[in-house]
Image 1: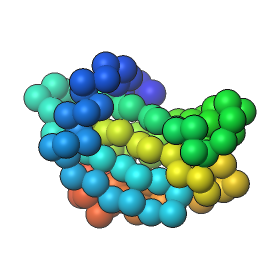
Image 2: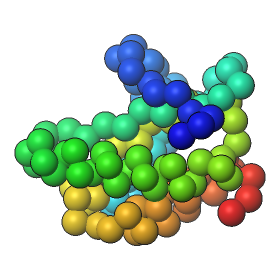
Image 3: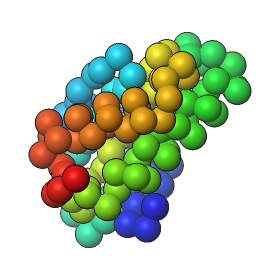
Image 4: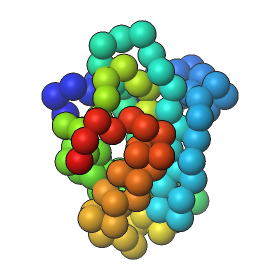
Length: 113
């Protein structure tokens, strides 16, 4: 992920949840907010509702790979939080990638695919 830095501070997640825009699908919940930086910041979360550590880590890996493949078409200057849902664990990476692209197109965050 060349043009994205990780989002790790809890207060930033809270700010995006409160002030950002969101869309929820059966596979993902995505929150985003414009930032004043020239690059994107990404946060990925998976709660204990999804399952044990193995399931949560699998969901995060799938989401991270889907984002990595989508990143070249993404506009810069946004904070994005992707929340894994229960069906993310059972889905394959291509399904998650399609869902993520659909959400980002809805937000008009993609330049081209």
